[in-house]
Image 1 (cartoon, one colour):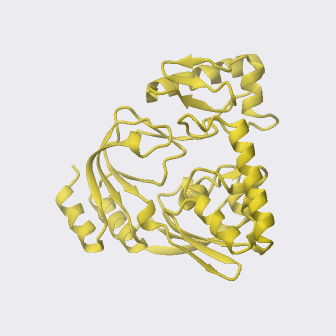
Image 2: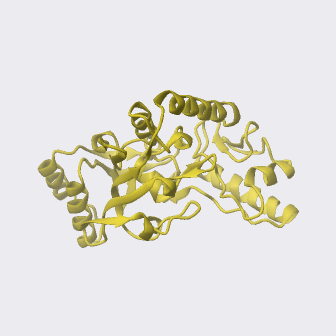
Length: 301
């Protein structure tokens, strides 16, 4: 049982906002998801730590969301507490070639801050629709660059509600994976080390990166980005296209005709539609090619 009154007291202590009976479709880029009892807008590492400690002690389920860009949320909702790390927890500080960003900062805003200060190394990450915390959680990447190339450390809240720091060497960063995806930790800030560069050249590279995204990806529709992880030895989008699955649909969910690696929400898709379509795609690809596809987004239920 979620004790709203006790959670409200913690929120009042830190001056953070909370909302009751929230629809998760407002917190995910797929625009899918049912109701959850309470969403708390975390505004500091100390706030996250006290909430995590309280929720763990009381045996209350909780999960952390940033922009919800790698989430498929259940139509039935989530029976627990959502700790939302967003604009209230998004400060970005620059010291020389070092950037420290709070977990709720968007990757795009950090890339822009780097560009404005003539710092190079994050150009290819521009346009990834997630937050700093979410990006590190899954070691997000694009066009040959990954978070592990520039992240040097992270501040996080451990399972006991203590604020700690971890170096990149200990994060077990690999393709779409980090230690944070296995542990009940809350990333609260990420430190990046970049290189000095020419601001205009960096801006041009970022613009080119966005042109590629806009021309090749179905950004006009809600989605969770790339739906399947890259299988060893091939590409999910290539396999799906080879199997003739572009445009395949279930309800309001469709394999994009623009980029077969994306399952999109045509407007009224449910979580059930998306998961059934993904199941069929995986089944056909396995049968026809021998490759077993794995979902990239996290299912929240």
